[in-house]
Amino acid sequence: MILHLVLFKLAPEVDDARLEEMIRETESQLSRIDSVLSVRAGRNVEPEGEWPFFLEVVVASMEALATYRDDPLHVKYVAEIIKPYTTERKALDFITAS
Image (cartoon, rainbow, N blue to C red):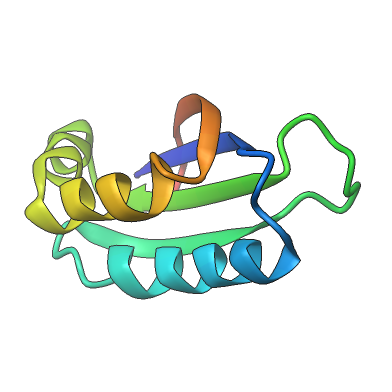
């Protein structure tokens, strides 16, 4: 299994309501991608933390991760939800035991 973790810095205009919508949209949209086994999104417990928003996607393999990245639903999600409301991202991929 591969855990794909992405941390985001938010654009200044993103308020709490917009962040909650981003979290809901992340889980709703990315869970529809066939190669995704699970998806979670949330906010940093420290409101002033450096990375206030995260998403976590679990896929079966590196090949599945590549499929996820190229999936039209993911491309649309990035264009409509991520790029307009974030300023920076940090992505980390981990191999997990299960």
